[in-house]
Structure formats: structure tokens, C-alpha cells
Length: 75
Image (tube, rainbow, N blue to C red):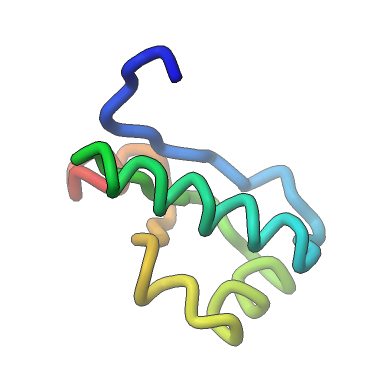
């Protein structure tokens, strides 16, 4: 709402992501995309990365290993 056009969310501290968390990720991606912005995730590991992969999130939201990778890739 404050006009941000590019957001990188570092989820490296997550040990679990629920379906509600996945819905939030998708909602943010949709909202930013609709406003001409970009959204990316970074730091997913273990079961969180597996969950994102199984849900196909990577085809909608770029998932990078590090914040630096996300910024270099421009989300």
C-alpha cells in the first residue's frame, strides 16, 4: 500500500509453510503484479522449499537461494 514496486521476502528462518502462508505469497504476488511490481522469495530450504516446489510456486513467484541472488535477478 505504500507504493513499493519490488519486494523480496527472505523466508530462510521458516521451518514450515502452511496452505495459508502459500495463499499469502500468491496474494502478494498477484497484487504487486497487478500494480506493475515484482515479488520474489529467497532462502527457502528443507521442507519449505519442497512445499513451494510441490505447490508450483516457482512458476508464479521467483524463488532464489539468497537475497543477493533475488536482487541480481530483479525478483
